[in-house]
Image (cartoon, rainbow, N blue to C red; front, side, top):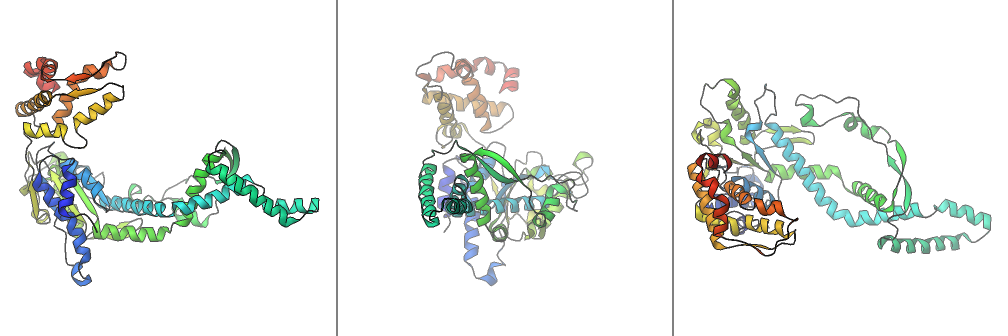
Length: 451
């Protein structure tokens, strides 16, 4: 059973301050993926995902929300930027490549799970093969048995005992540096690639993909250590144990039933009608996106993929444009809209200290690698938050990203002088922060340039 909406919000709270409405909407959407799977087959096909648009200025947590969502969603997930795509007929990536990339991720996800399941068996099989390389082959033993007129069975038993000794040494790492010679496949470099209607980049097809199974592999001798040989053999045995047809089938099912696409910067393709010049393809990109979001079949190198039940979460700052500038059909495919709030000085204080990846914790850990302990007083944290909020109001509002700029300026001198100068027990207080930033803040032109 997947996480409940409240559990999802609790996990997001560990990394993102505020924006409770956006967290709730995303949590409900994620949980609905599981709920739909529990519905009967007939009605399940009729339940369409409620796509979401996250609206808010830069630096308020939209991207961070997508990053954390990727880790929480036990499903194929891809984050793309809408501004990177063009409509059909223009140079650039077409929107169907989003789904093809999602399928690639799905295949890699399922394949990784299968590797974990067969890893133990692969190691066991690789170890047996490596022991056969380290010890004489049985046919050589038979030859020796004939020459020495000895009991062949006893020689085989002796070899088995020796093999077990080698196995123990191998497990203990005592043979890792010994050199061995192994047969490895010779790399095949295709002279040409097959050009498909959707482009070489998208299909990833070449002569090796088409004719590889029919062409015998050329082998070559290669010297390597036992440790290197073990890694190679484990990979080879793993490939033998994994049924790629089953992996692809499962990956396509996951993409179709629970795939998630985070479409960032959707406001960049929203524009007024009649736009000309470099932005001429904006509306075209929207129209190309429409069938994918509504539900269509996309051809990938693994087969045809339906997008009817893929969840789309779009986000944008919408400084210049607004959601109503999107074509009506596309607006209708995003029924849930959530506005993220601008961050206050109080939010900045919490962002600096509360999340698991808080900036104060990051810099404390970085400076700690130089065997120097650094601490920040509450006054220093409040001062940094106040300055960040003030600069955002006076200049461009870049949200929490302003904290990175200010923190780097405050600690610039310390980070530069370490490790040449010995420092013990550094303490950053309000006075220190003011002294480091007073000149920059006092000069408005300099402040606009640096901060």
